[in-house]
Length: 266
Image (tube, rainbow, N blue to C red; front, side, top):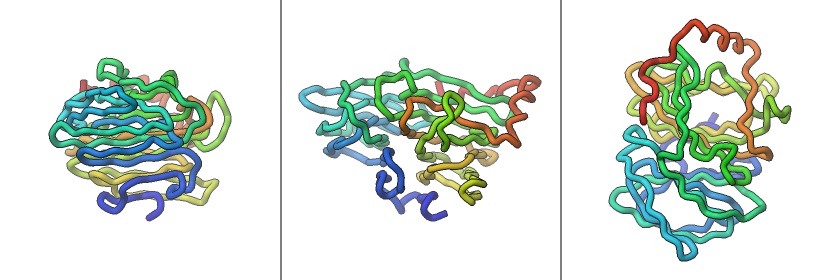
């Protein structure tokens, strides 16, 4: 459990070495700093505040929402082997999502209007997905989405996994969940094949690593839930396989309306 659930204040950055997987990086930083992308492609996602980013003579300005619940996201994609400088314009909290890659691509600034909103599920299993770096985005491995779940709803339900290569129905992906909430949520991660069954309370600033297994989350009553997902694998796909014992719920949604609170953020 301690290897997969990283509590707020007890972690700074996840690397492939620390997580025991091949590609995915994740971190959150405050204020101004300088860094290198190294052997990975990177997406900078302001969680709160604004910043200027300078890399190789080009400057971008991004961000603006006070918190993740106050607006749609900006993001800046930077290629591997790139030095960059982040200059905070006031208070800044910035997520750094990254994945090891081979090819060097061009930087891309993602504006809020570029981000597709998807409402997925129905009834009390409704959530909002903001597609930041989707499979069609010109990256090699990195995928990024943020998810809003209304208080009391289930998210990523029915539980799904992406740890076996059976395209197009399922592909292998490493994944992180970074949580923001004024309350708490419950995360379940289980894999009969790997002998894992974890149910954990997650709070603001916690990070969960998902190397394998079915996973689902429930937001506590009274507290809306946000999480930022970074994913990476050999294929640019987010295909996943439902838990076969719970997949039947999808057909039952035809008789339900989506939760009217979603989208939570526009």
